[in-house]
Image (cartoon, rainbow, N blue to C red; front, side, top):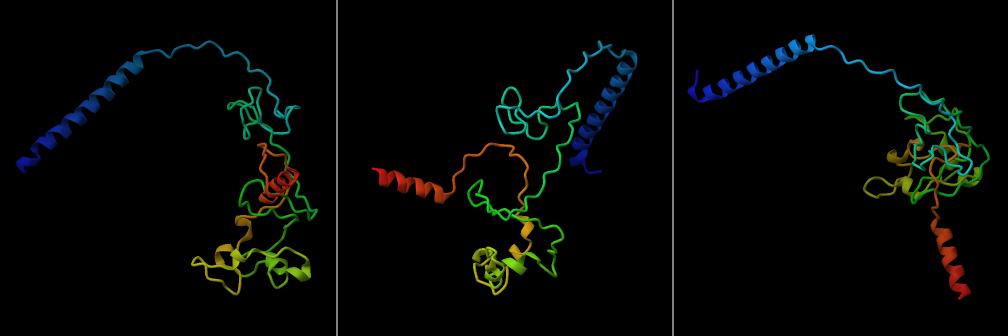
Length: 197
C-alpha cells in the first residue's frame, strides 16, 4: 500500500463509519418515537371548476387577479374539470398577429393533411407556383432559403414541416389579454396623427 494514500483511506473510512452511526441512531430514535397525531383537516371549500369571471374574458384569473391559466383557480390538491376541446375555425379569415414575428395561423381545418418526408399537402396550394391558381397566400421567400441564406428551387428542409410553427385557428378564449399592434396599424396611426397636425 502506498503511504501517500493512507490519509485519504483513513478519512474515507471515518466518513463511512460516521454515516453508519448516524443511520443507526436515526433508526433507533425512529422506532421509539410515536407518530404525531394531527387534528382532522377542515373540509375544503367547494371550488368552482369554471372560474371565468364576468369582468374579464380571460380564463384563469383568480380573485386576486393573479394569472393561473393552467389550474384556473382550482387548488393543487383538487382535480379540475377539463375545458371543452376548442373547435377549429374553418372560415378562411386572416387573423392579426399576437406578437412580433408570429407565424401566421392557419385559417382552415387541416385534418388529414399529409405532411411527412414524402409529401407536404400544404404546398399543393401555398407553393409559389400554385398560390395564384388556388387563391392562397404563398409561403414567404424565407421558406426557400437554406441556412446559408442561399435561395433554393424548392421549400427548405428547415421549413418543410409547417406545423412546427403554424397552428390552426380555434374558438378557444385567450388566456392572457394582449394589446399588441401590428406594424401596419402603428404606422397608420402615426401617419394619421401627423396629418392631423
